[in-house]
Length: 211
Image (cartoon, rainbow, N blue to C red; front, side, top):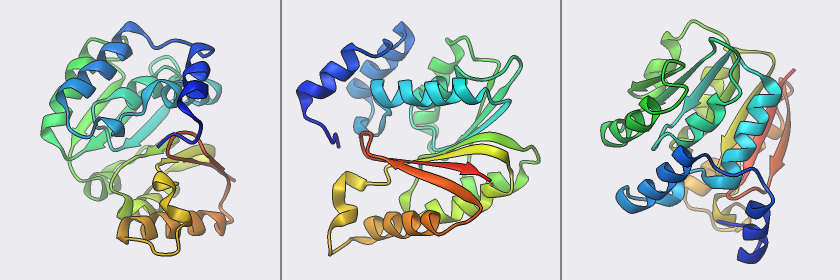
């Protein structure tokens, strides 16, 4: 869901850094060949993720939810030399698709794509992370957050996608996923371990900085 009209959205894209040719191809191929292409981060959100990563200059990034690899490639742009991004997703089909584009990128040696359930994989990770991006099944956002918070360095960033859930979070009657997102937002708002900012970019991004 976009929170500005199509003309303003196009204007924003026109006056933002362009997608690379590889990202443009990935965007196009996802829309042509993969189901639910609206799940892809896209131009503006991708540039924002890249921008935040470049400011942070992380040594280690963790992504929960790979889809077709667009956000991973954007986040990897900010990695320090010899930095590493680990991305986790249980979907073998989209992982195969994503890996093909990762292998063609400048970050093929910096990105590790793990096929598996995040709640199983995360406890096995021993490293600390400077940036975490959560974009997976919405009902488990709070669980994933608790799994990663102690693995994030002080001053590290956690970003959660889709926290406005097509605007449904403000409706009185909420379905299961919408309620889970709302509960997650409330949890983050009350958590003194982090400072937070909810940005109405595309479907909503919750930015968190670990104190």
